[in-house]
Length: 175
Ligand code: NI
Image 1 (cartoon, rainbow, N blue to C red):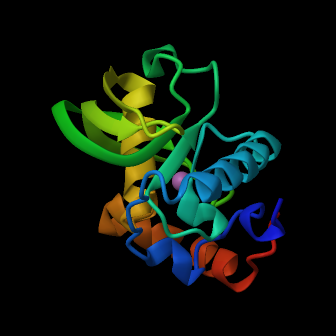
Image 2: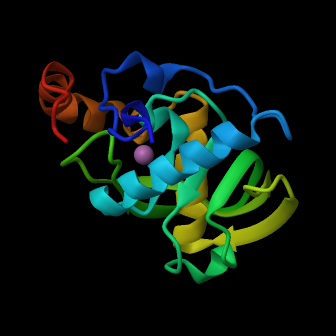
């Protein structure tokens, strides 16, 4: 397993700001398997709920969720080339991110989302989720587009966090 896919990239790392590219089946199958194994290890160690490929330095459209935690995900843990349709009311919920350690903020997002994606075998599936599962999907898909949750905070909140984020950017060796 490659080390380069095992450490979590911290805010300030340019890879977190890139738009990720879609994966191709069956060409990328071996790469996907290696990447998913590395990411699952990383997520377990970091004790997060989800992890997107750019967070381990890979600019591809894939994210994983922690297994057996969110029932609404219906057993799905690997989401490849996800397409989403957020809908429903806006809902406030606290968010954090392994790439922005120590910062947790309440953020408003759509409460429901329809997801189309492929699993690790390339099989298509669809889900319609709400609550924490919807939040996870929206947060992780943002990562694939180079967006971090702090970008979505109000200008006032962002201003209050500026010092903390600056320190994280200066010292990215948190893990
Ligand atoms: Ni995150």
